[in-house]
Length: 154
Image 1 (spheres, rainbow, N blue to C red):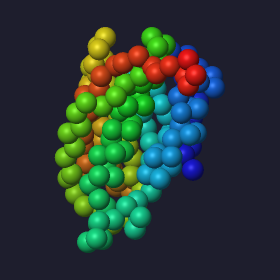
Image 2: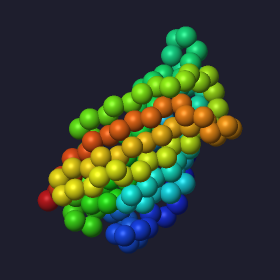
Image 3: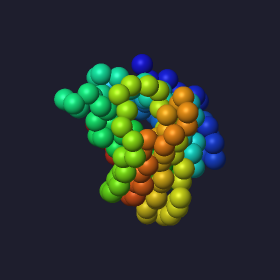
Image 4: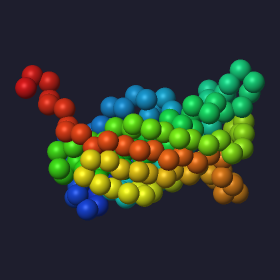
């Protein structure tokens, strides 16, 4: 199950239509196994417990798991940063470098905003092993800020 701390920060707390509600319904994050420690407009921290369900046929964690965790963390922080303006952020480029293989273990996903503009944002995300802090993957995600979709029936 996806866990998260209350999303507060420069844009205030979120009600039923805010990001925590989105997290509760986001099946992809649940399948990925991301647990969110904090989600702020400029920083996100999450954890993933990696195991056989994340493996390639050769028994190591698939790089797509890291790329997905990187884009998820960046997208949530970037969306929180623009939510008060009636916007959300979508990834337009994800450049992920895979630095060392893993078979299993807990990793920390730490995302920081590098640049946040009116129309685009750039985030850097590091994934490191929880046991020794060694970097496993690093990514940069460019995101586009766009208007929130209208609720169904509008």
